[in-house]
Image (cartoon, rainbow, N blue to C red; front, side):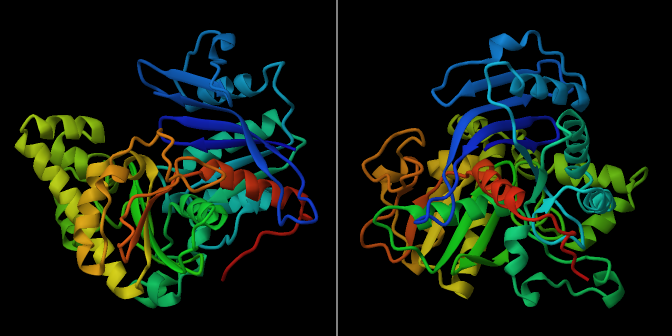
Length: 422
């Protein structure tokens, strides 16, 4: 079975093709092998860029001709052309990463007219993310009309959180509209749990924290492989400070902003989601550039990085005190590639027994260290000392692989009506 995975962003599309084999009698599920992956960035900008490689790293983008990407619709057409090259295998199912399912859908969903209608109703929950995903779904379903299409949501992993971890102290009528903590980065967290289960010579941590640190950031407490607490809330704007997002704010700040001359809900939303966070404090939201400027003595950037790591360390310490994890896992672009961020968080967890091993922490993410533990990925490694009471890991985020696994499972399951919560 060949599964196309589409992961849309506001100005980019990541796509990959997986080959799924059927499970043997001794396996709970089959194997998933990445055949091709690509990314289309800069959609709507002056310099759109397409990358497309096979599993061996060979560049396949030259066969696609010129790339003109002025809109998401044109971008989707380029992706469809890439995955329809004559030498690529035919596609048997498509999976999509969708940020927010809204208040009523539960679990990942086979896309039907009923499910699509509910996703359109859910746009107010994620107006910066879901419209692009729905546009991609519409275009791709028309291009591949006779195969299963599956929506995989970033919130599903967090459906196991207890009510006390999801409820907001708001009137009942508001809560009835679906205003609660949903949590995000669930596919990333789920991939971490899966990799630790599969790792060689590793005792699976009964309780752990997963710090997904990238353009968006969250920290999740996981017990027995299930989410019990997470920092993001109703939307991906809440929680810890991020690349361009504020994280949690005093609600009075939002009211103050709304009362400014000319302010609208849309303008405030753009500020909180796109002009805040590291970008607001440090001038840019690229961690490599921030580190470069900080090393050159730029005080503004140094403050931004201090606030960022302090917020993360404070959050991780609070969740550690509450949930008593035995492991902390770093994942996402910053979590996997920035040793200084990991070091600052580990320092904030020293009171709980965290001891970082500097040599292991400083290894590049693309190194093949002797401490690599996972059969699936040589990048999974331990970065704490043998004496550390809190074991520290770096584990790559494999959202696309998790989507492929869900697509294979749901595609082979009998079609049913959408799972709906009341």
